[in-house]
Image (cartoon, rainbow, N blue to C red):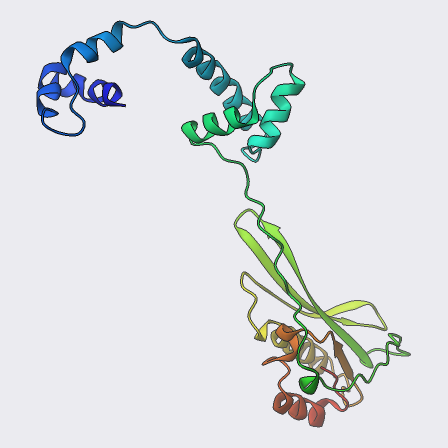
Length: 229
């Protein structure tokens, strides 16, 4: 590393001035040591590391930069190149390469306390004779190149049509409520009668906390009829 440091500054300052500037510092290097290192032939390990690094960079680029050390190591072995996985990891670190980090899938459903759960008006019977009788809601998530994207949606059971939705890059509590508000607004603008509507969702906290707080739920019941959070 000391030799590399001198080399990186010799074009601007020259070798001797850099060596003199390093005197009496932890990075001090004797001129004889520097010139010996420059004339010493490249070791077999250094030469192989350089060759492997070129191949690793090529495989990494050909696979859109998503391959990590394990997949690159397996690809090298498929090509008949015997190399230890730890060597691939070391060379990737030195070259500043890394694969796509696959973080754990987000947890969108956390059981709410039993005392906070409204009654199940559906009794697991997800059928409806007409539109706007039963809506069901849920949350899902999609991995993108910039992170997780969360989507809440409301489905009319009779038509299987998504009547309301909301998308966000964060899993905030009102995400489910915003999707429901959209569904209500759309159907009411179409002149739909929602007084007998039942809205059903799973008992997870993102849906059953603020979005379906008991006070909010009572207000919805008066306007929409039977409302199930």
